[in-house]
Image 1: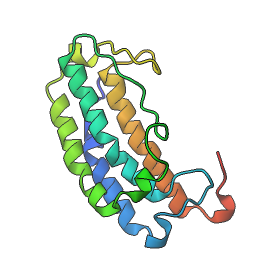
Image 2: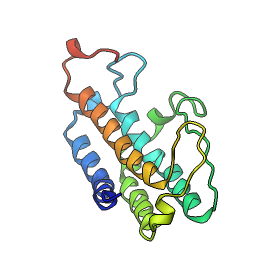
Image 3: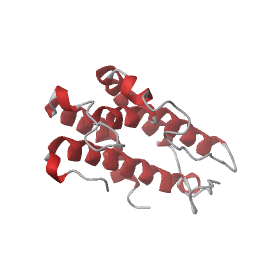
Image 4: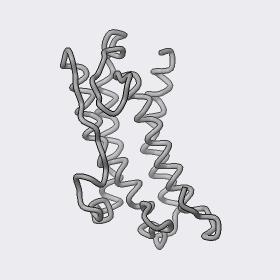
Length: 161
């Protein structure tokens, strides 16, 4: 677990990476679903922000509960298909820094015992706050990669993966 501080730094910088990338993307591409059945750039960006409050709530649970248990988050099963598309992009992304700073405040005082606390999660095993913090970082990277891929890839090279 010697990588917690670099993970935190990466998470702190995530909103800046997202905002800067979105500024470069032509407006006409933002809501285009370039691959049938896959999210648009707009949806990927709004998802990163929308899910952050659930992430923060989980870390509070990890901190406060002796035996935390979480339910799987399965996008597309509990909200309308167009939910993310309807969110205002600029206003939504503007909240990302604030929500992410809240996360970093929540975990600031976690000690080894909290980081390694066993969390019951039906989808993942093992699962603990440390794994989830790293997972959040990878989740950022996944969606930002999808944004960049959707933006830069020539149509002939886009495919369902």
